[in-house]
Image (cartoon, rainbow, N blue to C red; front, side, top):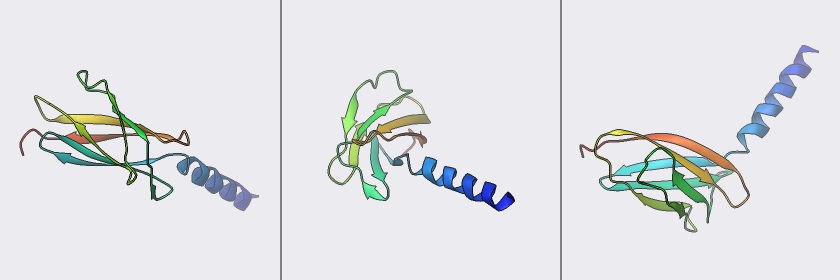
Amino acid sequence: MSSLKVLTATAVILMSSSAFADIRVADTHNGAWVTITENGKPAANASVSVANVPQQKQSYQTDESGRVFIPLTLESSRSVKYKAKTETGKESSRFAFHSTNK
């Protein structure tokens, strides 16, 4: 009975983790390159937005390689929350630290 619980828990974890898109962020001087993948493949036309920067209200679309540049004008170093939604409806979010000292 115990092994059945372990197998069930493992299956639930695997299914829940596959429901999310992967977000990678590369900080640059005036923004960030954001890459979205889904099941290890680039997620074209995914919608990417920044949740905790008040002056950044626009949503951006990824290209065919799953990448998009998001311009950021920050007055101080801080963590920025990125939110992504793929064409298939999978959603994910991630915090990334951005430094103003580059």
